Amino acid sequence: MYFFRKHDPNRPSSFNLKVMHIINTIAILLFLGGIIYKVLEWYVF
Image (cartoon, rainbow, N blue to C red; front, side, top):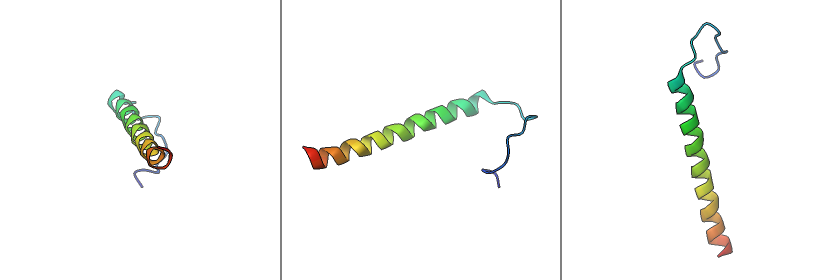
């Protein structure tokens, strides 16, 4: 149940974890953007 646990207020907030989540989000958005671009390239051009 690691992914579904509640936020623990006693646990210190980690800067590295926040940066990792930001980089992960950017990577996912770029990946989805690339897929959308390729699909549009196939069907439109």
